[in-house]
Image (cartoon, rainbow over all chains, first blue to last red; front, side, top):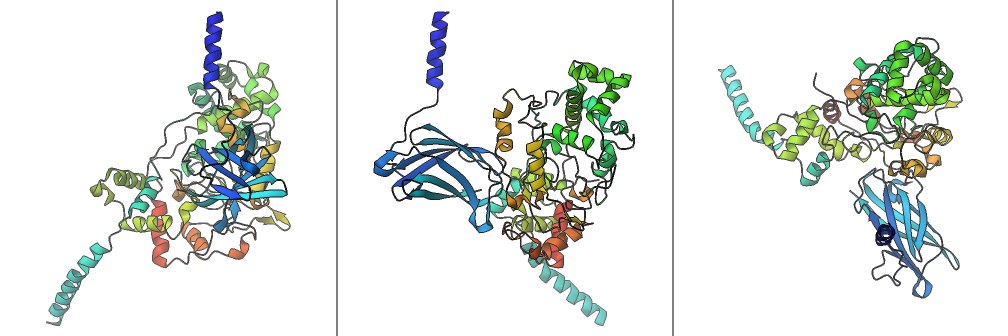
Amino acid sequence: MRLAGLITGVAALLSAPTLAAANCPIAAPMAAAGDYQLSYTLTPALPAVGQPFQMMIQACGPANSAYTGPILVDADMPAHRHSMNYKPSVISTAPGTYVAEGFLLHMPGDWRFKFRLAGANGPVRLAHGHVQP
Amino acid sequence: MIRLLVLAAALIGACANAPSAIAQAVSFSEPERAAILRFGPWPPPPSTDASNRVSGDEKAIRLGLLLFNDPRLSPSGRVACASCHQPEQAFADGLPVAVGAAKGVRNTPSLLDAGFSRWFGWAGANDTLWGASIRPITAAAEMASAAEHVQSLITTDTALSATFTQTFGESAEAMGTEPVLVAVGKALAAYQETLISKRTPFDAFRDALAAGNTAATSTYADSAKRGLKLFIGEGRCSLCHLGPRFTSGEFDDIGVPFFTGPGKVDKGRYAGIQYFKDSAFTRLGAYSDDPAGKDSPAAIPSRHVALQGRAFGSFKVPSLRGVQETAPYMHNGTLKTLPEVMEHYSKMDQERLHIDGAAILRPLNLSPQQALDLEAFLRSLSPMK
């Protein structure tokens, strides 16, 4: 019984999400402004139009440190002058790493992911283009 | 002699025209082909709703069918679900706006393929089909009923009572008033999930295109092919009417007036979100049967939907499957025919769009032939009779 519990514990540890801090500076940042930079991946990697997806964000701040402040995320279609119909929520999973949930792009075309970080001197805005097939 | 010359000239003309007629045969580029394939396959694989424990259950489907056609759900005994969602009218009613206990302000949407939706109704006031089935039961202008009346009907009708108990494993009397209303909504939803539209000439063309079967693709009318090309091309219709159901499932303002009377407006999606956030009958509420509750992946859009100003006057992008059978059109049923719909998009009044609305729409300025082609394509989205 005790062995079974140990095995279960080890299995849980192995399957737990990685809680590593962001690796700063980011080798290939997708967006940068001043001392701040970030990159992200999507889950699923290629979401379909109308399919909810998550965004895994790595963010770095001044002096190549992991950014630990709040992040607001959004997406819009500049040419169409509209944003999403949803407001994603963001949680931090480790210093400099965040998971945003609640993205849903309802139209194919040129979208822009927008990020707002809390900089030392005020909001820091970053953006990165995304083509939704 | 003159007649002979005319005939010869006609023959020469016909021969001369032959190559150009072939040259004008409709073909699709690789990106167009990829876009067309995304409109299928049809039907999608069957699925069930985790928030409804009787979704897909045969007993619930039978109970739902009984209830759907039973006008006694309304206290007047005159309005059933089927009064407005008439099976012989593609589960719509052919009227500009619904007439239940009173005259409504919105067109009755077809229920075909409703089970595949994320949001229900023109304003998306519900995130489940069972919630969307409860709303008209209690709405004053629709069935004008109440949970107490519904429970009383189920408990006093011997046949309904027995079927209800078999379906839910508990009598309507023991279950409690509001839970019975929810159970009725879930049985109605189980039935409506079975209402799936039939395959169409477009589906046959799409599948032939996917298979590279040129002989089969050639049987699809050229006018429909030209309309399809316009639909996915310069018409930009497929920005919103996309996927196998020809809808994004989301909401837009397309310049249809939203005034319902002097000083009265239909707020559309804005009111829908307000209703949803106040409702107990959602994926986020206690009546959802999803074991993951509000953390379910299916509830992610429900948790994150945002009440924004631009939702005001927006309405759900309708599916175009079976569109030929569901006239009149638009949320308020003001466009009587498909040619009137072509006219709307061709000569769109951009002044009617919200100032902060999406900059997507523009008058298509369709030629008469283009309007006919687009209409031919839309008609090919209905099953052959």
